[in-house]
Image (cartoon, rainbow, N blue to C red; front, side):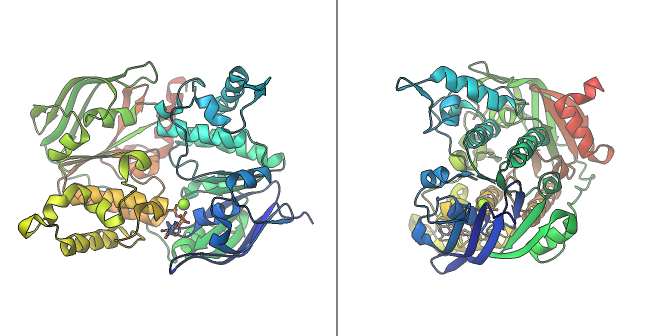
Length: 507
Ligand SMILES: Nc1ncnc2c1ncn2[C@@H]1O[C@H](COP(=O)(O)OP(=O)(O)OP(=O)(O)O)[C@@H](O)[C@H]1O
Ligand SMILES: [Mg+2]
């Protein structure tokens, strides 16, 4: 029998009084792709952090084995030299360094002791081209969009000589097209002998990729099975302890004619020439309507939302009308004052306030509401409304918990909770369910449908065509333009993917 490429035995991790991993034993073999799934906060990231040297060696008990040798890593570099490489859940790009330098970070090829930029650029271009998108290796990585940054991180991992490759939700910001290309790469690597651990919340991806699935629930292994021996419904049930209903359909008949937001001849052009930006589009959202926006990476979806709230770094032109009145916002804060709430896809740098706790993060936009007599903050009221948000969205956190210690999905839900407290007129959401587990995704989409039925207009950008089926209308973007508009009931996930990639025009 071949020996496992990696194994954790009796692994336990606690933070304070919270037990996050509870005597977990699991292993993986060479040539094998194991999918690791579970609800937000189940302990997935913690497990792979212990295995890859992110977690200090005294932060866990139990044993870690790599390639038949017992290990206790004290850094990621040490783990990497033993062959274990992690693509972390939260992006770790060095923004001012070039794309090529980011791919080769810490392992730059040298010639006569000098970093060989050219070699670095050529090899990184090669690796990046596997994903079918063009990224200039000389460009500072911080200028790239979030999905492109994710691909740079994956490229960094792929370029290392690893025997165990761990990807923590690599496809969260990617659309189906890029995900498929990534899967091809991963399958090839597995064929060459790599052992891969793949964490995801997109359960539909699993069968395409992994032969085995491991489900964590509340810090314990709930299921460890070959994919062929199990149905998708059973995976969900073992993740959440019950079966799950399907995504709701937005009721088609809010039927208001009241225009909330209207864009005419709207363009957003980048300062330096990269990506198409947004090219002269017209868009209208009505009261109570959910407008879904779909498109591949670089189609201009994020740029569109950012340009509306004054967060776009580039040239914006055209006319914006808010409830019929001409307006223009110079910053998200100004937009917020008009009831236009924007939640960015980049929760790490633009969303959460890392130095604050959960309560402070959630109530941030509404602090005025909690000011009582004498201008003092009414902490009890603030705490009550935080607890309500935590309950409504099923956030796994305590109000006083530091924001950065929440699992990725729970950070995302906290951001949404913050937006909902503002009672917005219009919500602009960029990937609102990114990194959120299946049960929470349903809760979020339900919450959005409910908000729309209360008259709020919602524009929702998503890479998951599936969840856009809960919208009233879906617009597909390509190359900065609106190329198609569909009613969910007369369209399908497959059709949206085809239009987004441009494949419909060649068929
Ligand atoms: N440094 C820390 N301090 C306190 N609690 C922590 C810390 N790191 C993680 N936790 C807690 O441990 C639990 C498990 O977190 P983990 O990040 O492993 O979850 P996850 O399964 O990866 O979830 P997600 O799908 O949301 O990424 C969470 O409840 C989280 O709040
Ligand atoms: Mg995680």
